Image 1 (cartoon, rainbow, N blue to C red):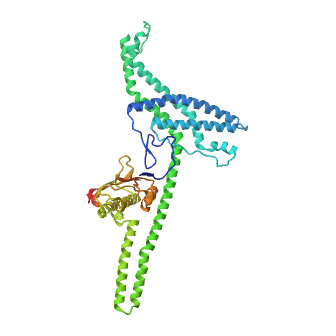
Image 2: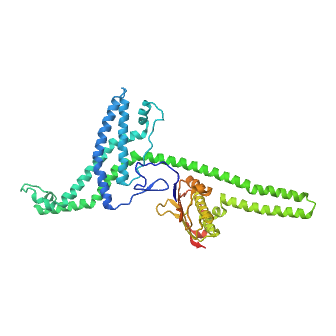
Length: 473
């Protein structure tokens, strides 16, 4: 089975199908689509040339509707006309977001529009779109987007015309009428009279236009697409950030509350019960008349005390492992590998200034993964990788891979479920891929936090970062 858990679970902000042109990241952003320069030129050309006709239709409909709605606002029909115009602009905004995703490879997040509550009256439903700020940004885009679309289309068309006309001038110039009174461009720049200088000049201009064509068309696409992104997607990005922050705080509170409940339960079921037993044994020894009975009670109390101390140490490691606090993540992960009974191969390459909460989350991801491997997988080899994500330097990658039987699932145990909350609280991403028969891959992406540096705790031999590579059998 395969399970992918993205933290936090934010509603889909796109109009397009899943698995679109961009790969999702932990922060909600997407990796840019990689295309060849020829495909990029074709997409930019299509985007720029179609911007003018689409923008023209949107400009006419929205401008006429807005003027008519505002003019008739004093009548009952004015507001419905204005609402219809806003919805029309929203439709063109949806179309532009689709174009941004399909032709420009942008994320183009879809905003959440205001909607009337269930059971609202007709007038409430009509007026709700007029109260939404994004609706008026859509209207603004339909007006000003026509200007950038016209510029992009005209410049792109003229540049293609310059390329085709200049590069082929040597062929079609023979059909041009020739007159002694003709003043050519070549003669004006001092290259001489006649067709030959004109051929060389136009061919040169055509080749220059050809070489600069991808750059010019790209700039026109960026001009139009950049304005569209600002007006149509920036508010959606802010909405997504707010949802992620709220979800992250909620997840952190849930994880903290769950940890406190588990700690309270473990203390009650473990050390507290043993200390009650110690008190009873000491009381029995105190009132015993037989020295042998008193000695047996003292021995039992001693064993219970030792067991309680071991349980308290285990609980303290679950809260904040001393080695992690004192020496940092690299040393703590190495200590986990040393305690493991499986064949664990470790690769650690950490940046300087890693945040303490990021270190703790990474540590518990590795610890829980190794615990599950030992209990359930039957693996003969485990690979642990902790380091900067090669696709995004702002993320810390924690990956644990084993060749066990697979079938792991977050719903099967509280340990993995707790990791979900812990990673979600950091606005990270957790992927669990564990098909039946294996292998199992647990991968976490955690945002780096340079603000809570922990360099002072590092091993002095580790330098600016922490690096460790090795294997343990």
